Length: 276
Image (cartoon, rainbow, N blue to C red):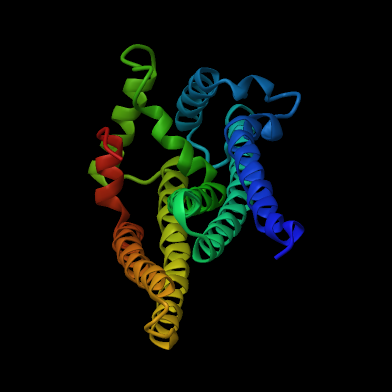
């Protein structure tokens, strides 16, 4: 083996690791800037975004119209663009992490000693971060689908709004839900709440199916690998166990979201009582 041939896998690993670090930084820092326009630059500050949305929500509720209006619409549009940026960056990060994991495990199978330990750690870390990135992709997709619904949690939590018009507005929403009253604004709230959970259930189902297929391929690879190849068999078996467990966990989440989408009233009442 020439030194050039030996260096190629490590150069690929280094490139993938560098790209991962760059995308992690971009995922944290870039979305607000990418989503901002000249009119919404201030929304890049979390405190400003929360305060602006709360004020706009109060006005929206009291207008009684389904249309978001001049105050709320820019916030919803900004939040949509923010989730688009986050989803794209998370998808790119997921792709790079998968590549980094594959490269790490391939090199691990050809290497011994301390290098093998380091490569195994890289493979495990890449897998863990890939799962987090997958969750980020999914979260931002249903955030894109229902940007207004994904803003609603900002009505609660810190900074606590115990004064001003927001508590009275939220009390009115709760009363409408309890009494079964309808209004254009409440219909939009309900619609986005359902859409938020329905999209999560749909995308989660697709990912579960992919994970099930991947599990089948992993176990097929395990059975077709010669028993003398202990390290590859152990690696295939480890992922063959991990992947269906991940699919099962996600299936539980899918079921919960599908149930909420089908019967939104209890969830909405709980949400506006301060739970999410």
